[in-house]
Image 1 (cartoon, rainbow, N blue to C red):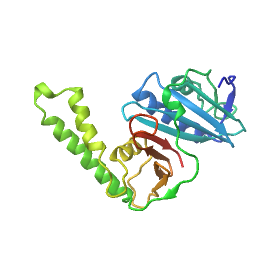
Image 2: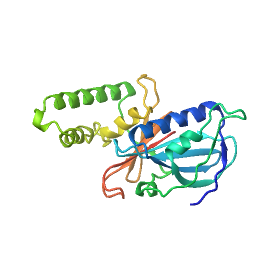
Image 3: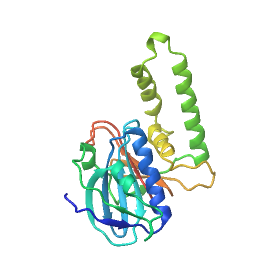
Length: 229
């Protein structure tokens, strides 16, 4: 959808700064990243796909005004346009639209989520992830020199991160994505929940959530979407 460039005001400087940090993470993995923006109800949702995780990620920010649009733009241009300390308040000029990559057409449902039991505590999730990272490093170190290639490392990663978490059916890659994107915290009382809606699963925290569905759902492989609560 073609949307004219407009100025977006944010509810406060923290909203704009948090969005800038999220865009920075996306650009760390893909300097040419595009993001899909959806605005409505006084909020802005920003979707991206860091290729290293093969995930779809979304971060929301509260807006100071009312806007309604759905457009895909350059993540780098949006980050450059953000001004958390603007003279008239935190704001950004919306960049011009770009041609969206295929993933922009596949998003998780907005409603219909139900609780699913069996999720470990945040502290336990942190331990599981630490053990997985240690295993990856050990297996990588043990590779003979002639097999120490990107393809071999990807095979090790696929084996580790495709494992499911207990009886939940949630792939460990989803937890890894949530932690890497800053959505998980190690505190024992940190609220986190696992939800389902049809073929989708969603790991929700106060800072974001990770939703995914199985192969055959339209993206070819497991699709992961990070959503802010």
